[in-house]
Amino acid sequence: MIEGGSAGSVMLITSGVVKVVATTPDGDEVAIAIRRAGDLIGDHAAISGLPRSAGVTVVEAGEAIVVPANRFLDVLAENPSMALSQLRRVLRTLRESDERLVEIVTMRAGDRVVRRLRALAQESGTGRINLSQDELAALSATSRSAVAQVLSQLRAAGAITTARRSIEVVDIAKLESIDPLTLTTD
Image (cartoon, rainbow, N blue to C red; front, side, top):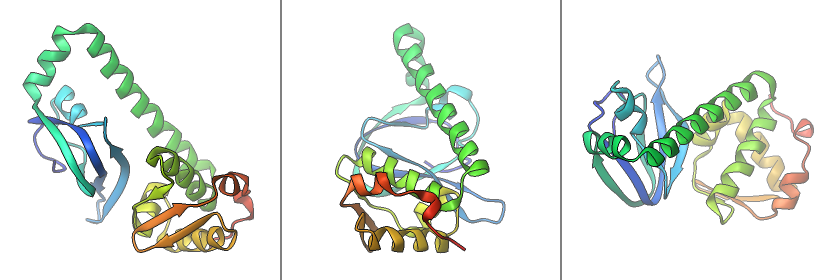
């Protein structure tokens, strides 16, 4: 799925992980969400009829079921309970966007990084997060250098380990107990 492309299909991710990416006015790619098995992508464009507002990039190889947009819309029209479920999902996505906006405006970079790590660790089910520091920075609305500083402090505290394109939360209790206000960033 390509940003700006037509809403020709909807995908249901059955396995693997993708990142949802948008392009900035300067041409940089920014990760705005992570989607996993059970998530739909392309549904907003299919419902609105507008071009796709973001693209997707594979993080962990997997599979997806591709449904033509017109068939997806027919299924929603024929099944009010499914349409209501979809409406709830879209509203949940809108709420998450609102919450991220509040985070960006009110929280320091360290707090946003720790919050995103907690959420990603829970979503993964294993504590393993397969993202680069640049991708975590984009999801946390901060710089890569701020993420590097926070990760260094979290490693020193024994809450995480890191490897190339991978962060593992090894002590969730420790991560939960860290006061983000004690984390320093430039």
